[in-house]
Image (cartoon, rainbow, N blue to C red; front, side, top):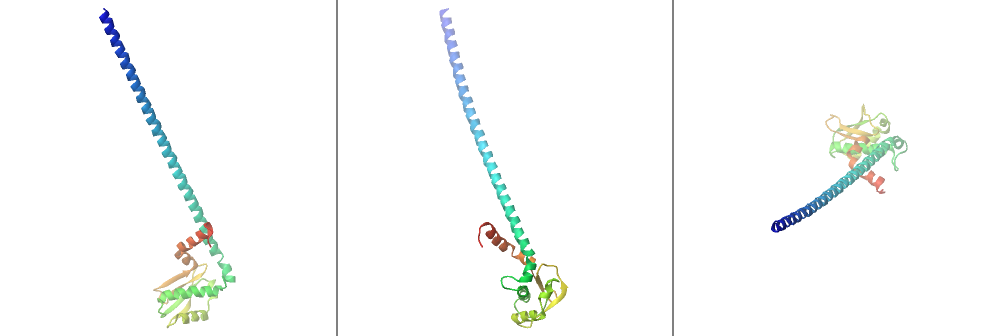
Length: 202
């Protein structure tokens, strides 16, 4: 009987020890899992926070870029609106007739390839036709040299200013209107306007 009771006590003790050991292991496992979960959630929260910050930064950059583009577009639009004033009073010491003559000469040289040969005609808007005379065209032809002849076409174009010069046969033409020049030089002009507006450079 005593042996049986001792054996029972021993078995119960071992059982309790095993239970306590398992409980401790279970607690440790739960604690480890809890720490891993907390770390994972913390990492996830940090990633979400970083993602939100990146998204906000990108949105801010896009908003700034959109605003800058809008302001640059306004500058371009305003510059074209001021052309009537330039036609009336000139620009930086040059009359509008001089400016127009320069545009015609530049286009004429491009059409002829600098050879100074051939017959050319100049297309102008109805407003600009009065700024160019036969004498002005003769002077341009003389400056280019060779056997070039330049005349004003009866055809009128829609433009705020500038000219189109083409060969009399119509095979080659150069558009030197202000709108077309702004398109061709848009990258360079945009960069200059951006520096002036946003970085204080003149």
